[in-house]
Image (cartoon, rainbow, N blue to C red):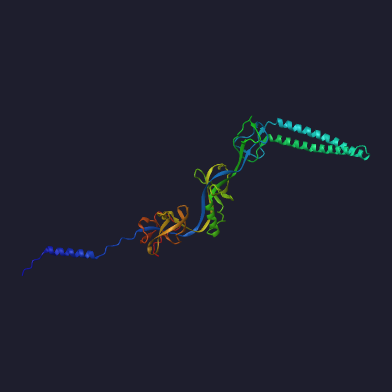
Length: 390
């Protein structure tokens, strides 16, 4: 019997066997996605807040006339520094000199009268003893003497008033400071009680910055101080920095002066005042600035890089962390404020949690990932990625 070989049939059987062998091996699983993580920790953080405010001089005085008259001289340079007691304006004093002369003459007349009335009263007392005059005449003489004495006192007061008015014709600086422009010219009439001052003097070697802080923030801070989570009283607790309108920081730090005792009902804010030295006169009254106030130190604060915190559809702060077995967990966070490029997290994270800051798009809750050190996010002194599983 003759056996005929079929090469095509053998080749087909070989291919079928190979395909069957391939179907029996399971496909390889893709490697877990890599994510950049940082290990969060608790540390003391100095809390500060920036508030808008305006600068005001420590002392401001409006120069006003105490008597009326024509301005004869202006004795200062506008914009210069004047000293307390320095004569600034001279008012025409002729009428006031004449008034002083009249008062002095009236005083002399009263003093001459008092002597004669006193002597007459003494004579009537002697005559009364011998029944030379009546008691009524004695009483009248004593009353005239007392009236003359009172007239002398009144005339002395009139002389003093005339001298005061004469001195008021020289308008002096009430405080030491820098004087602004003169709002009156030589030859103009200055009147007591006029609406506009003659000039304004401001003491600017030390200035105040008044800022407004929401009452709610103030209450929150007081609760934290009461609970002990925030402390105050260290050497930095009274520091205040000033941000100038050009964006630069004023080189001299200030201190908190006081906080207003009432809340503004229209804005719901409390006024806080800070004092700053101004030796070079760089800070001008009315200047708009921002004050950075140190509120206290939070002893156990958890800082999370802002790259690792996002918002969900409800507006809540959420973050992804690497949990046990390198599985991804989603946490809902409660944040307080930003410190640099980090958030202060008050709830949702614990020290030691591994926060995902890079590769969030490749990570899903419950998914196993491969944690590694981040490439772009700095974490201060330690960039522990916590690559091992828990």
